[in-house]
Length: 182
Image (tube, rainbow, N blue to C red; front, side, top):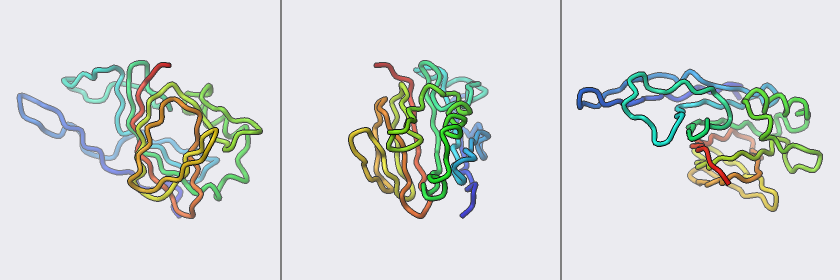
């Protein structure tokens, strides 16, 4: 199994002089890996820094840091490849989990602890629409686990959760994360 799967092409369309055309066409520049989870790749395809978004921005994507959470009032679209838990679950440490959340700019999001059902438990102030596009994965919640497969969609509303790939194959999930409030 490759530790870094290829990223999909990103086409960004823009209206110029009343005609739609591709402003960008290529591999997105932002990808994050977690060395404690070989095969984990998070690729950001788009980010906005406000809602409603400015559609006439000629340079395309605003300059938004590549973090786990969108900026205040913003949104992020990303694709994450999850390796099987069996490739890392016995070797991941509290320090490596902490380092991951710090690296993605969200140390406050980690809810890791000795009684946590998964080391990557997290809670963010976001509304996330998540679609499994390949493979199988389990959404780990405080009170239950929910098994998902390709085509399933989760609307995650700021709850404590983790993504656990209990299969032997990678799983790919698309996330559309939106800043939210309680």
